[in-house]
Length: 79
Image (cartoon, rainbow, N blue to C red; front, top):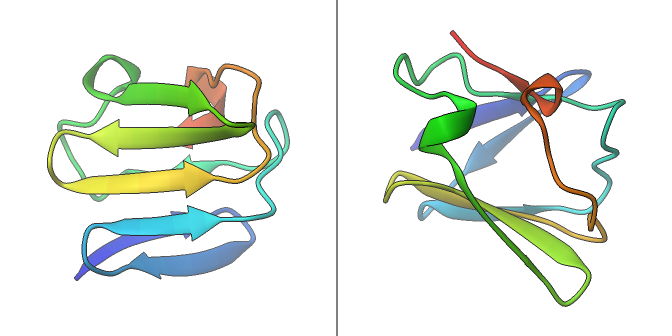
């Protein structure tokens, strides 16, 4: 089981993918500090259909429903 947490709430990603339906850029953060080598450069993004999908290699896929603005380092917590 891979554990990611959002500041203010917590979620678990099972089967390496999950969806967040209430993420707000500039307000919420995705905590990736459990992944010591994670950085903005190690993430990839797919912006399609009014959603954003964040990929960290083959470790996980995280869909952010309704998020269309590009994400920045301030949207994440890194180790």
